[in-house]
Image (cartoon, rainbow, N blue to C red; front, side, top):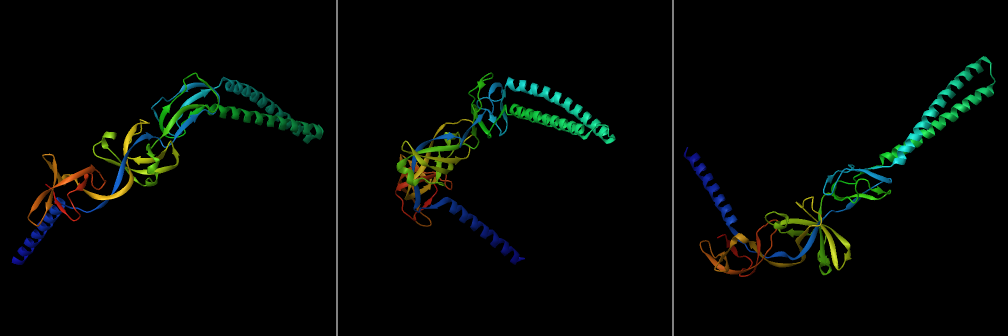
Length: 334
């Protein structure tokens, strides 16, 4: 019984010691030099990776518009309907021709059946039978030709439905109902989904920018709290007006406003420095102090010179320390 009690007490003491060690680890921070990105602030715009026009496939008059600026569309959705009166007239003409040819085919089929019956009895010569068969074949082929022409007209009528080429947001609709357009004209402009940040960085920083680099955005720019992080997806090889263009993916950009300007911090090189969590720094009478552990029982406050805030995914409140600390110092949370 006593042995069991001793074991339970030992386990309890071990768990308490582990908890104390974990708490101490959470309340202290060891200063060590880290590679810091030399960040530069640039302006970026929220843009679609590609803007695709929905074009008319036939000429005619816009009979119906199904979307307006700002609408979300799916790929294949009907954007507008174009009508052409000439197609309707051609359809009616072909329908009349097809009806007449169907009657001729029926008559030719009757004549061919009667001719085969009379030829089997020996009443008419084979020449008359061949003439009936030829008349039936000619009429049948004429009916097939008119039916094929009607299918072409029907396809043109179907192509009057302008479809969205991709899923996204409608940016512009430069036509109205009743507008006369030609084949190939733009009916609507659609911005593809999955918006990106398009950066324009001065070309002197081009050698530091590459795909996969992180970018940082102040949360207030997106209506959120805290820093937001993204990744450079593509760096364009062509320099425009002395600036390098790159695309970055950032979660939460939204899918409505296109062209919105946002300030973004990008890396323009690396340097070595000290960063500590901001919660370890306290300000008194305008001077910043850090609690420095001298031994197991004593902690002293040392003045430090703070630099810029450098939030990182692993340390959201990271703060650069310019002077006052050295590598190996153990800080204690105030």
